[in-house]
Image (tube, rainbow, N blue to C red; front, side):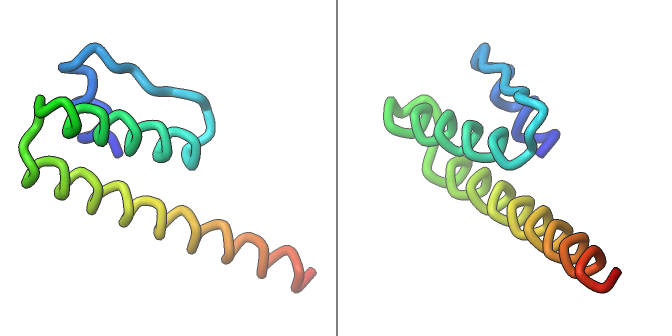
Length: 73
């Protein structure tokens, strides 16, 4: 997520909401906008989407683990 955030900063896009899930969503939207206006190539766009998808999965897994741990109490 750090790499995508730094990449977007090159285009004057700063995304930080204190909510990682919202940040991922906004970064994906920003990547899509850059791709749509042809500022980034398809390879970079797909790589960015892949990284954001992996991070979303990681956060979801982490959330599920915390939820399961709370249910066991």
